[in-house]
Picture (cartoon, one colour):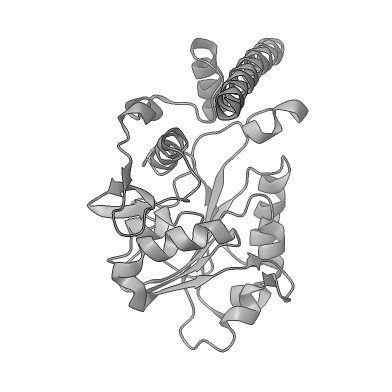
Length: 298
């Protein structure tokens, strides 16, 4: 009886939270559209984002590219050997945390597919900015390792930086077939070095072959990562996909930083809304998602 009551209580709380969140998003949507009705955007991409929002619910991304992905169609399996949940992606097993339920995995994997769609503002690569055969990758903030898995056959080596210990078990399972060219580093990537943190300059100092491709997506700690790779930025060839949406000012700050350090750079087309900050959103609401940059002639 106790378990039944707890289950019913959990479902009630979940439904209430979902209802409350939906109402909050509707309110924010009205606020955004009201703002741009008063101050029409001059930027073409921003005009497209506002137009899309005027016909759709509030979401993270804006464009028809995302409409072909549906979480309900994601098939979640359980591995008979290790008991971990996984989905098949391009013929490979992508494992998830043991604690995740089916619906959480469906939603998360669907988000991953949307983010790495070729037309998404969050996509780390494009036809002129690729993972090439034999590249070494630093996947900074790798979580489930989806990006590395997509390119694992091409890569000579990938370094997976992920501080969430529950992800480590899943990462080890996902990359077992390629363990000879995968290194998992369970630490925060930062500008300091201690029991929990590591800087990229410090980590790669004794390693002869440095990465050339750096994917940096660390939930708002990107500035610390950049500060901790000063030597690499100046003394090695670097191709960088850098997230710029976790803080309102990140895009402008990182653009100036890369320019100062001699990088050729360009933002991904399109905009997004960072829904983790719905309670603190201010104009212009939409944010640029990603900068692609190199310090050499590609």
